[in-house]
Length: 111
Image (cartoon, rainbow, N blue to C red; front, side):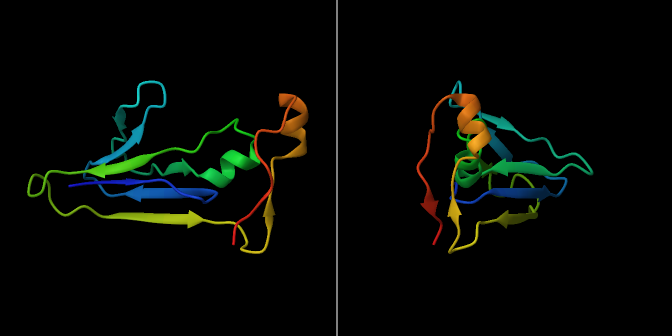
C-alpha cells in the first residue's frame, strides 16, 4: 500500500510511532528516503504556501507512507497541518524578494 501527499498548506508536523514507513522525496534524484522513527523527533513537512512565503527558498516537500500489508503491525501517526486564513493573502516575504532579486510567486488567496 502506498499513499503520496503534498498540499497547499504552510506546513505539517508529522509525529509517528515506532513503526517505519514514512518517506520524504529527494528532489535531486526523485527517489524517496526513509524517515527512521526516533523517539522525540517530529518531522516537519514544508507545504506549498510556505514555499511561496519563502519565495522558493524552502521548496514544498513530498512525503508518503509505504508499508507492505501484514509486514508490520498497525502504524499510527499524528499529522497536524497548519493552513493559512481562508480570506488572507499569501505573498512572498518582501525581504526574500529583495535578497533573491526577483519575485518567484504571485499573491494567492488560500480560500
